[in-house]
Amino acid sequence: MFNSTTQLTAEELAAIDNKLSNRYIELDPTGYFIIYIDRQVGLICAKHYTNTINDKGLACDPETGEPLPCNSKLERTHTALFTGRTAKELCIKLFEETKPCPIGCLDHAAYLGREFVRAETALITGQAYIQD
Image (cartoon, rainbow, N blue to C red; front, top):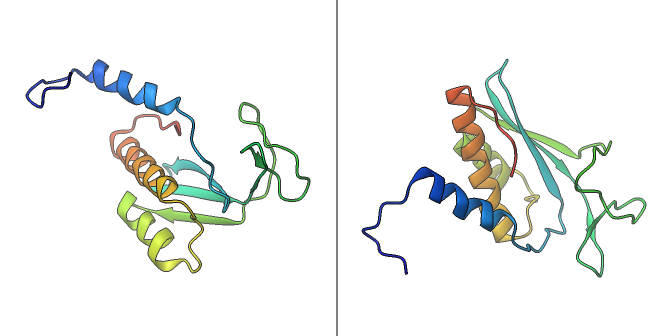
């Protein structure tokens, strides 16, 4: 049982996150993002790609209808590139300034916010950033 006074170690917190990263999620029919950092210019970057969701819940290429592979490199053209110097700046551009907003699900928006903060931390600390 969780006790609010219990201090968890970094390893225990990482284990919680790793377990949660392997859960089933509903995919956003408005598309997905590939997030990376550009250290030369000091930016967090997010390329947006469109997709459709088939009747099995798989993300598919809107042109071919074929499921998009998860574990291999896929050459597709992004529909938009969003950049920001901080996670907050990138979120404002994406959620407040882009009309229509390219995110259709609240859980996807929450995920992007978490990833942008992780990318910002990596940019500041010099650590590697790998999208979850």
